[in-house]
Each structure stands twice: as structure tokens, then as C-alpha cells.
Image (cartoon, rainbow, N blue to C red; front, side, top):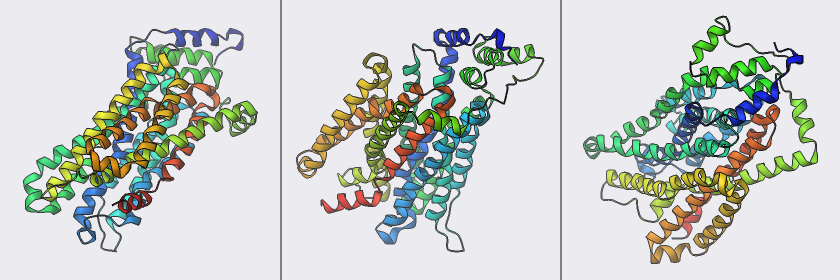
Length: 462
């Protein structure tokens, strides 16, 4: 336990802030980012899952899941995420980052396995109902990952590259999105002959696609469970400078974790427990008008951008179908064209947007990127909504270009900045909780665009 007379906190923080970018920072990006890859893989696989389940279980309903069950299936993970981000944000501030980090991946793994084994039951419970339950459970872990990984990445980052590191962590979502579609198209072609003989074989494809979501989780789980406590949390919340120094050395020491443990008499680093953050402190901090204003601003921006983000992504397959891309003479052709159409959109706008945010975040700044993104999205959405029919009649290519351009500005701007800003502007003691709050409102924004309304709008335009 640190002696207050030897308090050396500022020096420790200065060392952490000014440390040169190294492979240890890269490890923080990968360990945190792989979780986001898995999160987005699971969230985006719903586009594939609902399409294939429609063909395999609802042939009598025009090969589509009925609107209400389909809407519930799309929203299930979001509902779970709302609970996960708030609960784990509070727990991470109360008990520390290390004690909670990794649990969210275990939840995702269990939920993913359960979802991949879902089926109609003899008791009359449908496959969609069981999937809703497991995706709700998955969502709990997905939501938890946002405040946990954002906080970990920010608190291990150096000052000069913090924005770039956080943007890189968040950009892993793009690889999760394209990964879901690539896995789907690979296994669709592996089962091609079987599917053309027996369309029910499509059932294998969606189960494998869902199950593959555990691969990135398993890859990152060990590193999350063994990562040391955040030095900033140890020092600023627990007020234990000696342990903070050892936490920092544990992570950045070139001789590895075992050397640091051996130097601590063969034991893992212990910390003082009596200084943990409390809900009362959170209320006191945000009772101040300037702090409440910051919380409102971050929550409102995340709410607004998630309406745009998930209004597009959760219904992407529907939109691609409506513009005529998911066509074909056989069920296999229709599904494969639909997946390829999704891949084109992701590669054209989704991934480049993330990469631009990494390149520009320290040049243009957080607020600059956010303003540019919101302004351009307003212009693009006005054009798409006002001239939807005319654009499609004139050129499907032009519609896809504008649609992909919207994705680019979403991910280059507010989708990334609303993730970065909360974790940078709040103090260590309330950082994880305060990051979970904007994400909570973001998910409310996502749910504000129910799938059934978009179905109605698209069908009514024909």
C-alpha cells in the first residue's frame, strides 16, 4: 500500500502519457478491438440470419419472417445491449476494470453458442423466439464491451496517439461487418450443391455463420482476463501509487508479466479496496451544470447518430433487395447475390469511413469530424428520401453510391467521434459509467427505427 508521503502520481501519469507508441499499445488496440469485431459480427449477422431463416422456416409466408417476430429478432440484441452497457459501466467504475474485463466476452460466447443451436421445439416454441432469447443474452455482453473496451484503450493510451488508438479500436467494427458476410458467402458456396438439391440445407449456413462469432472472442479472452488493472484507475480512484507503477510495468515491461509477478513475491498485484467509486460520487459530479451539459451533449449525439447508423445497417439486406440486387433464378442465387450486395456496400463506404477517421482524428479533431459527418449525412439523407423513386428509376448505381457515401461519412465522423469523446472528457472515477450512458441513449435511438416501419415505407413506395 502506497505511503501518502511518497505519492508520485503525477510522475506516473506523465510517464504513461508521454510513453512512445510501442507494440504494447498495439496490443491494447487489438485486445480491445477484437471485441468490437465480434460485437459487430454478431450484430450484422442478423441481416444474413433473418433472410435465410425466412427461406428455411417460413416458405409459406413468401420466404420471410413475419413482421412482428422479425422486428423482435432485430431488436433483441439492442435491448440486451442497453442493459449491458449501463450495468458494466457502473461495475467497472465500482470494482475496477480488470475484475470485469473478459466477462463480457464469456457472455457473448455463451449467447452465440445458444443462438447457433436454436430450433423449433416440440412444445411449440419457435426458432425465432429462442433466437430472440439468446440474442438478448448476447446483447448484454455486446453492450458491456463498449464502456469496458473504450475505457481500457483510453487509459493505456499515450496522450499523443490516444485519438488514433481509440479510432483504430472502433474501426474493428468494420472488419466484423465484412467478416460476417464473407463467412456467409464462403459457407454458402461450400453447401451450394446440397442447397440446390435441398433448400433446407440453408439451415446449416446460418448456424455456422452465427457460431463463427465465437472465434474472435476466444482469441481475445485470455488477454482480457490477464490484463493488469488500469494504472490510471489504480492511482486516481484507488489512490495506490505503488500498485499503479507495478500495473504499468506489468503491461509495458519488455520482460513480460511473469517477471513483474516474480518481483512481487510470486503474487499478482494487490490493490487497496476502500477507495472504489460510488454512485453518490457520480450524482455529485453530474449535478454540476457544466458536467450535466457534457453528459446531455454526448448522449444526444449518440442517440441521433444511431438512428442513422442502424436505420441503414439493420435493414441493409432489405434495402438491397428492394433495389433489385437480390435477384436470381434459384434460392441460392438470390441469397448469394444479397450477400455480395452487402459486401459491396461495406467495402465501398463502411470500411473506408473507419480508415479515414483513423487518419484524420488528430488532424481535423473530434468536433470537426463530427460536424462534417452530421452536415454531409443531412445532405445525403435529404437527397435519398426526397428523390428515392427518381434515383432508382434513373440509376441503381447512383443510389448505391449515395448509400455507400452515407456510410463513409457516418464512420468517418459521428459514429467514431461519439465513441471517442465520452471516454476522453470524463474523469477516471466515472469514466466507464459515463461512457455507458451515451451508449444507452444510442441504443434507444437504434430502437427508434423499428424494422416494421422501414418495411412499410419501402413497400409503400412500390
